[in-house]
Image 1 (cartoon, rainbow, N blue to C red):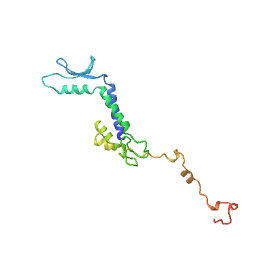
Image 2 (cartoon, rainbow, N blue to C red):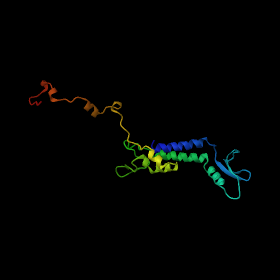
Image 3 (cartoon, rainbow, N blue to C red):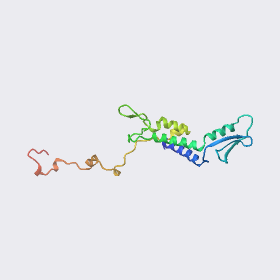
Image 4 (cartoon, rainbow, N blue to C red):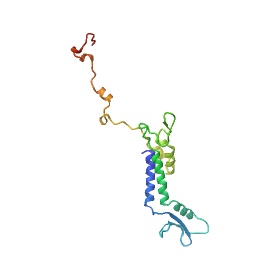
Length: 185
C-alpha cells in the first residue's frame, strides 16, 4: 500500500463514521439542569451529555463546543475536500513509465516533474500528517514502482520480436539459378 492508498483509507473510515452519525448540524447548550450537552439543532434528542455546570469553565464546556463544531456535515465536507486533493495528486498518466505526481506540476522545457515519486508529494504528506501518519507507518508504506511490461506471451508481438524469431537467411541458401556471375558465397 502506498501513501495515496493509505490516506484514501483514512478518509473513507472517517467519512463512514460521519455518515453513520446523527445527521443535521449540531449545537452545544449550557443549562443549569442539563449541564453541557450536545445535540442536533431543532432536535429533541441530545446525543452526548458532557458534564455539570459549576462557576468556572470546565473541560466539559470545551468538549461540548468541540463536538458541536465537528458535526457530521462539517466532517463530510472535510472528507470531500481531502478526496478532491487526492484526485488531483495521483500518478501522472502522461508519464506511464514514471511514478511522478500529476498534481505537483512540471518545470523546464522538458516538462520534468516537480516530484519524482508520488510518496514525496508535499500535499499528500500534509494530508497524511492531518490523518495521523507516524514515521513508522510512512517508512512501512510501499513506494509506487514503474509499471512492469507484460510477459511476452501476454502481449502483441512487435517487429523486433518477429525478426528475432525467424531464422536468418544466409547466402548459401540462395538457389544456384538465382546466383549471378559475381556471386560470393
